[in-house]
Image (spheres, rainbow, N blue to C red):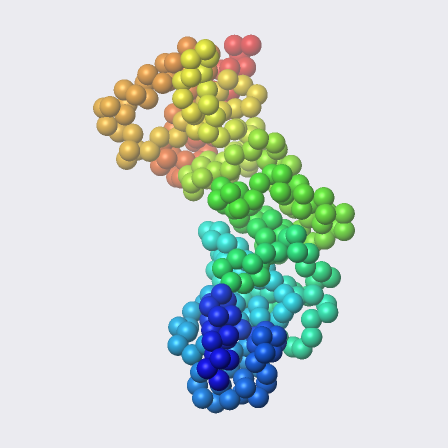
Length: 308
């Protein structure tokens, strides 16, 4: 039994303390030995198909791993996959698992099983001890099951974390889009809206600013752009794609000192010398007076158009 436990612990150490009975049989631990170890308290049964090494502390992460093993061949997916990758705004529960048609038995540990035609190895991977949908596929699943705004934020957050890229999303759509799968139309729309060279927002403030442009029917603005003429003037927060308009979002808390104001004034003067109109708004205004910020952007655009 000691040799059995040595092999079992070697396996479970890579899977958060869990293993399926099928995995144990594959390393030479047969059903009778498994039952003895469970009776002795060395293993703890979690459902009919999964065991946990004694002493493994309970956690939501362990529950996800156990649910994935219970439904194998499978992959963690949808909101659970987003949370597993660390994308903000999602929780591990309810535990959602994608499973191929050929899976046998009736899994009991997941909150929801999504039966799929296939789980291509190219779009799944093992991350933190569990097979999980790659970020691109997880976002595709989200596009088919949650509202557009939340899916867009998930996409931007995953992009900012460098979990995916425009190129990897195009590759996913080239494979999945042909089959007209649920969510592909929305994901393609989000990718097309962002376009080549897209830089995702890295803060909630940037996301909020970008979100207020769309309902106000304002043209898209590029974010975090190096600007200046012969001499680099700095990286600006937002710059219009069609006009020499720059919008700087200043923190009332961190841009109120004399030195900050002087540095901002020097950079603004350099940008204006290069022909830009520089509009400064506060973070408070972006959060609390989005309509007012949009009106200021419109006024600046009218000024530039009149100069033409």
